Image 1 (cartoon, rainbow, N blue to C red):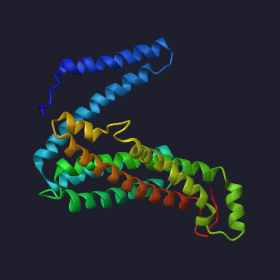
Image 2 (image 1 turned 90 degrees about the horizontal axis):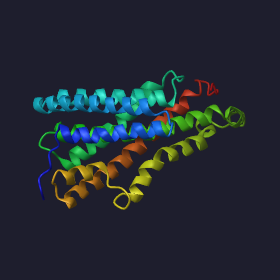
Image 3 (image 1 turned 120 degrees about the horizontal axis):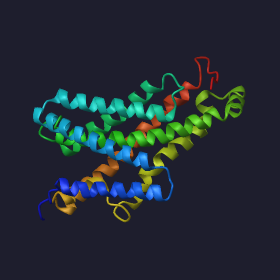
Image 4 (image 1 turned 60 degrees about the vertical axis):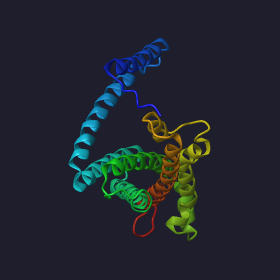
Length: 258
């Protein structure tokens, strides 16, 4: 296969012109999204350039502590974003989200690094950081959808929940149906992606590897691995976060305090 065609500043300027056209279209249609497009484009450039320099520095260090610190920062940012999107009213939500994302990412990463990929060193940044980022990003989205759906459903169903409790149901039984629906909602996007991958969409890792000159069949094997990894990690994160959110609505005496 041909080598990857290198992009220069002129090519990036042409790509940026697409955002300019999007801003112009937004203004023409009076959508009011001009500043959002401009700010989003600016943040994309700044954040990715910073990420690129940091990754280059970490790769050069080849140190396990540097890799783990990078993953910890990514985890904390993901947990903060998820907490803010679910609710800022639940006081103990952040440690629940952080712990859930940590558990799902740690278990999944350990499995694929130690049992499947088996790099020369377990902390190989070439594998650990990109895979960790993909797992965290997808788990964050699934957890946000499930957590927000569950919080909203429980908050709006006080009478039904208290009725279940008065009839002898445990807190877990009283919110079981709401939790199940929230978990399903959080897992709809990854399941839908698995249903149409290769037919409607070509995911990022497959496209990126093909563009870099890797054999398409080899890239496909990696993409299959990623799809299965993300499905498992999303499920674990959603189950842990919804369980933690449910507990926030009850006190030690199993009384509803939503």
